[in-house]
Image (cartoon, rainbow, N blue to C red):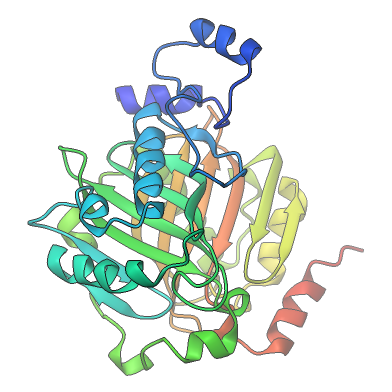
Length: 330
C-alpha cells in the first residue's frame, strides 16, 4: 500500500474555522491529517470544506487554488498549472483548452468582468496529490447569470502542477437557456479528453472498485456487495438520494438503461483518486454521452458514498420523472 493510500484511509479533519478547543486537538492528530489551518475556505464563504476523503496535501492545494481563483488574478491562478502540459475541458459546454496559454486567456477574459464579491469555492475534496475529484461552486455571474455547482476531475504532475482538469455539472441547475447560449454544438465537442497524457495514476483500490461498479451497472447486475452498510447513493441531476446497499442496488438495477451510466455501451474513460476517495469519468452511447461517478470508500474498499453528475438537459422531463418513480419502494 502506498503512503498516499495510507494517509487517505485515515481521512482528514473537516472544516475551515478553528475554535480554541479544536486548536488544542490538532496536536493529537496523526501525521498526514489535515488541520483547518491547512484547509482554509475562500474569504466570505461559510461552507465547511469536506476533506474527509482527501490527503492533507491535496486538500491544502485546492484550498490555495480556490482562494487564488477568487482573488481574480489570472497569473496567480495559472501558476497552479503545468506550462508545458495543460488540458482543461468543460464536459458540459464542450469547451476545450489544450494549452496553458489558451486557459490563461480564458481567465484573463472573464476575471476582469467578475463581480467584486464573486467567488469560486471548494465544497468537497476526494483523492490525493496524484489525482482527485473536487466539488466546487462558482457564484452568480462568474461564467453566466446563474451559479454553477460542478465537480472537477484533476490530475497533477510530480511537481504538484495541474496537467488535466475536466468539469462535470448539471445544466438544468445552471438553467437550460443559459446553457444553450454557451455550449458548443455536439458535433464540435472535443473527442479527445486527453486522459492518455496524464495516464492512470489512481490508487489500485479505486481503479478496481470503479471497473467493477461500471461492469455491474453495464450488465444490469446487483452491485449491493460493493456498498457499505450505511452507504449513500445520490444522483445530482436526477435529484435522488437512496440509502443502504439493498435499496441502492435495487434502484440501480431497475433503472438500467434509464440512468445514463447504466446499460450497454457504458465504459470507464478515466479513474482518479486515492484508496479513500475519487471516482471515474464514464462514456455512454445514449443521449447523455459522458459524466462522472464520484466515490468515497471505507477501509475495506466498500463504497460509502456514490455521487453521479451528468448533464440533465440532455434528457426530457419525462425521463427525470421516470427516474424518480423507479426510486419508489414497495
